[in-house]
Length: 336
Image 1: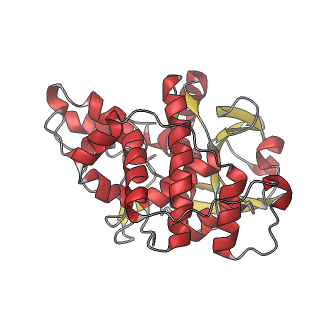
Image 2 (image 1 turned 45 degrees about the vertical axis):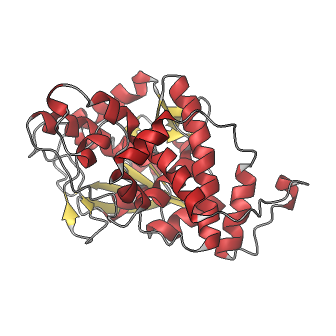
């Protein structure tokens, strides 16, 4: 397939060989680590650290650079007019209030929402340093009045918010993390409206019931405590060092980091279970606290914690969720 065959509204799923991308693929069970939406006129809408970091329009050539391949997927109901989907995308692109920190934020979300063996000391250490680095970054983003968003959430919201009705044909279904069954998943904007009509979701298919986020949501006291914690000093660890830890965990002998890390040693501190839980609680609070503040009053106050705690912020839909979605069919791959 050639880029000239793309249609406006196409879902684009990217495969990358970056170190963080390799761990994302390992944990999420697919070969894709990034997502975007083709806007037409040789432009892609995506959350990408290119130029002004955030949800931006990028030329196809810029968007596809450095990837192994990009898989193109379309709704199975192919006769739909995608004008409303593109209008939602245009709205997000014009907003300018979203900020992307692509792979490290996506890795943190996957470590938080999937069933991951954090008893493994190496993976637990990777998770702790990733959570800590993302927490510091999210705090800065919140202070700027911006909302972090991962690439696949942008794509998912464009489709889910194209029509308001529950029976709309645009929403992308995902497979439940618990049972791998097909489940309807509403975006955080749509969930707000459902709470108003007494239809909150308490079973969130993109969050595994045995995940660290699911456990955190069941302990509101710890989340509240995490919200009120003062901001800590920024963690003195680089992304290169996290990548080096990942390389060791995955056994990527071919990956060399001596030059990028320089004289700074990769952290060798043993991370306790308690340390990991504290940092995870802080990240869970960062990912859900805007909703808890928003839903303290009015008709939202009686909604289940699981529903209201995730209704205003993240959707936790990964590129892998889009890749596995039964709503989308592959129409071809574009190789770099």
